[in-house]
Image (cartoon, rainbow, N blue to C red; front, side, top):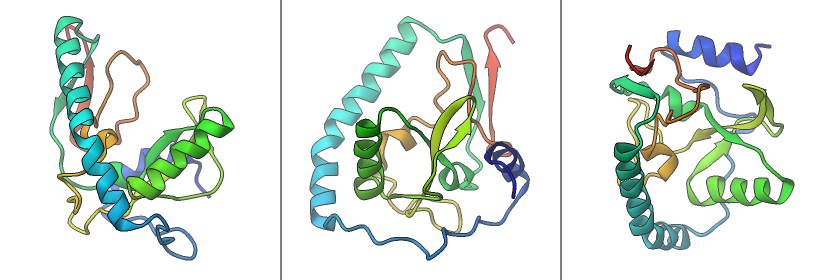
Length: 169
């Protein structure tokens, strides 16, 4: 079996969708109307946060610049990395991302990527053509993609269409 790093490295060359987790997608147990209400309540705050981030990045430009554009292949939606923190925060974050945002776990154990533990998730809203069926209410994680900012390590997948360049390059 390939390690996660090898899998993420090879995914840019593939045109096929990865298999769903064993047993298929688990149904979300949190009621759909409540999910929608929570998303609608959070939406203005998320947009305000994203706007503030854009202003901050104009004031203090990051050392890395993202070029290119999305090729709508959906690879970033097949392999969403969620960093694990403390046990309580990880459980809360998993609840939020699986029950509210609509992601699903690809495996129950965390994998080590770039020296840190991450859960590997996929998105249940991804269509076969690589587009999002929940585009208007997509999570901040998706709206920020690819978010490189001030970090040297970045998780841009091969073949996605984006490239990261250092300042002055």
